[in-house]
Length: 328
Picture 1 (cartoon, one colour):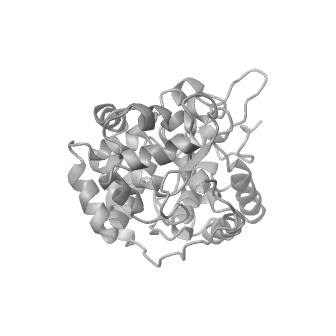
Picture 2 (tube, helix red, strand yellow):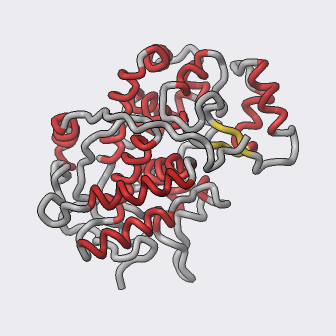
């Protein structure tokens, strides 16, 4: 079942974590202390409103856009940090990250939305706000517009001057087991709690048949009824591009339904169900499935942690004028 733009949207929740949470998360990582939620308060005070306006219209037009932007943020931050390297187009001499690894084949989209935001921001504050910060703000607003929490986003990142297509090939895949997932997150300075919370982003969005076929046909920890249902959408051979919602119960709402699904063996991806498979994060899945507020708080905190992964600051990198290409 495809998610259509006519599907009802969740009402954004007025759940704003205190600025202190953002500040403490940044200060806990001393190398990132240059990031601040008020970084543009003097140089571009309208940036938050500009991002929100474009994102509101984009999500209204197609709810899938929210999940797409959130995925862009994760895929960007996991490759050499949150530096907007993913947004760079391929050139005749330099392949980009968009066509590499799990980003290939059109599986990442929403770049045009970031372009629209950048155009609005450049008109108001030329050469001031990085594409990396725009993506971080857009990811936050995507979550909130779909009914999830909001939080103060530490800002002050700068943009990479080159992509890393090889790094994009190392993004965590849908067939990883829990140990491999924990290891991949630890390599970025993220904890098992961050893994459990950030995986809740799969409460929205879609996955292709090729990404979940092995799980629903071969794994023992999947609900037989759920597996049978997914096999109707995803044949044993062919139909690789067929889509299924990661959360079939509330596919357009950012809620804790993802964790309730895991409790019944209805995680669409192997990497999803691995979070509730007699492992070290089972207790967090139980907590989040029963306590939406706990999930919201942990997700917001973990998004701040993710945004603190190896940012370029000070004189490193550049402030790109066009998110798709480096400055000439």
